[in-house]
Image (cartoon, rainbow, N blue to C red):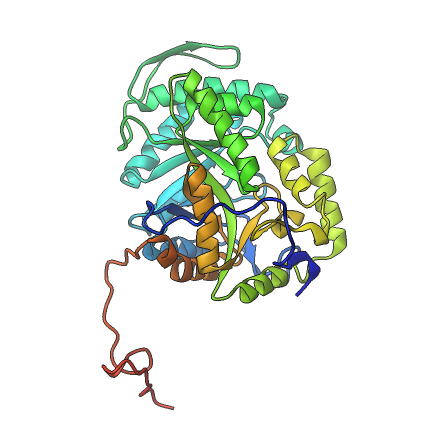
Length: 405
């Protein structure tokens, strides 16, 4: 086992007391990797392109395994999340689609029409995740040149118009960045009063937007004390607006039958990752991103140090060595990971947006191992009994095989 993933490494933060499994089940979402997938980080070895057939496999697996929904990200390196979700909706039954949107690249009236249409097509399974921050270099390629704080001021205006339209109102708005006159939707969404709005951001302007405009505030996986401070800040700011906000956690999961297997899997994930790739990724994040959240992620492993990856009990920062955005994973056996998730739930987290590499296989591992510990029951509509044989029992509790050799 490498030093970077040593589960005995100490950390000043202590896990909270174990919560009883009778606690309300968490709503667990999965992830659609529209930028590609694979078994190893930082290498083309084992890479899987984000072709639609593969993405459909992941979505259908998540649907039948009991995941509450999927997050589909956005960005220059991602296939378009809205088009992808529209295609996947017809191949799934229950799955909700949380679609990332950069509000600065489209008008709120246009996006509201798309949102209403997708909500109707999916029969009420549409959610939106507003992404205001990020990479100014990439945003410039989209024609967006607003500085950090102004992007959040723009987002506040965008969401004011967007929500009112989806609620069926006629909107007149004259703001600093956006203006509309007698805007309205002729075709409304299924969900009322409107499809929920999700949002993340660690800066003060981001927290202001979350407090006033969004339904669920999403945080990346940081040590419990840091998450608590952030969630408390959102609560207090929302209270000033006379509102309450729900909370979600975006994190990766590496769940196995034993702790040792899980940490070995974490090691394996970065086993082909060269130091040059880490250095290049961290340099890019530092130079191109003005996201406070990204800076917090990079600080967890001190800018790319392999021996500083275990940052809290079972919380591993290895993914953030080369991945922008959410860069931490909970690593361990199912019972331990469930306990850690319950610790976040005790802070107010209601939804976990999880992922794992590769996403198809890890969806099954997460559902089969972790869901029973969390009190989540499969929703497979056509479950059937197993005949006596390779996977069946003789009625005495003894498993035996009758398969042909």
